[in-house]
Amino acid sequence: MFLVFMKSRTHLEIDAVSARRIAVAAQGLHRPRSEAKVTQRHFRRVFKDVGLVQLDSVQAICRSHYLVFFSRLGKYDRSKLDEWIWHSGEIFESWAHEASILPVETEPFVRWKKSRARKGETWKGLFELANSQGEYVRDVMSQVSLAESPIRASELSEPRNRSGSWWSGRSDGQKTLDWLFRIGELAVKRDKNFSRSYVPFNSAISSEISHFPDPLESDAINELILISARCNGISTVSDIADYFRIKPSLIRDSLPSLLEQNKLLSAEVEGWKENAYLHPSVSVPKRIEASALLSPFDSLVWCRPRIERVFNFKYRLEIYVPKEKRKYGYYVLPFLLNENLVARVDLKTFRSTGKLLVKGIHLEKGVDPEMVLSELSEEIKKLSNFLDLPQVSVTSRSKPAVLLSSFLNSH
View 1 (tube, helix red, strand yellow):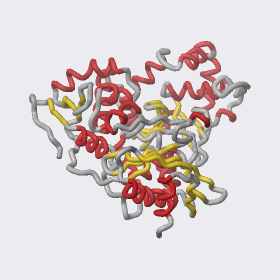
View 2 (cartoon, one colour):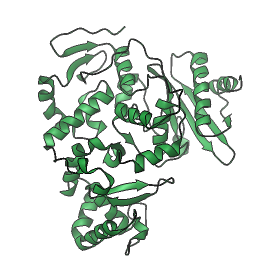
View 3 (cartoon, one colour):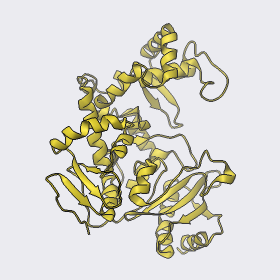
View 4 (cartoon, helix red, strand yellow):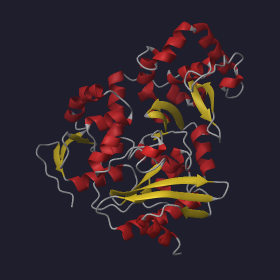
């Protein structure tokens, strides 16, 4: 049951189970996946639910953003998603929650972040390059503006290649393009290999958006707070701040006005030490029916303190942990079943042999192994089908892995 009563006009008390259900529903993970062909309409719906999608280059399974859409929509054509994201003009890439893609309607509300970057508040190294090599930066901008097609760093007339580690080894040309992207002068286009090329920003979005007057910084921050609150479902100040990577102090400054206008509601959540906030449009389902393997960069789980608080699920991405010190594996996906995170699965694709490899499976305490592994086996089969991999192979010999294998082989 969802237990809530009004202590004042806008202050609520919410039990822990209901908080989890609110969080899952806000992300659109409670909806049945489409049985019809997935179209752009479905892609738009996902963005409405999540607000933005984080990008990441790790391909242990596939690009992370593909998994975000699969978790909510089921099987779809990845090439259709790529074409829509990078060529429709409806979506743009920006530095929001790390490198992210966002609906173009959000663009005016992130301009203030680009303006602060231009002043040197972020990306100190890029800021120093821009100020010490102003003539070169202007030349790069001119080359992109005059190019007949998107331009890569290697295609600059003077890319100024460097050698060294990944960051210091990037060419001045790549750093300059990155700087111009981060301050909003250039837009990124990506190809099927996820490689970046650049075009003038205003050529990548509609004139209606580009000519939209710059909002006041305070108004833009308020808009991002409301998007974050709606997509989180239920949030603390730090949760809201993390969604668009805004300083918590800016969130706190905005809260009194948003609460006074009833654009946010205040709440106490069972077991939470901090106060919580909800968007007035929040959905409060009586039950959740969901089954999804989640990318480590999915917006339901990307804020690790939040998922520990909401789902009692301590999660760490162990990509950069030495192999011998990993507890669960290299690329581990949380498994959502209804309103709970019930397992974690270490997966890897081997496209040369057409296999999806299950390297490890770990169940959370207190779950029903047969019920969880039966549901998980179905989800793994769907993922394998989505990735066009005809075989699933379980290499672990743990008890959960053996039981999972039996379910995978039962049909």
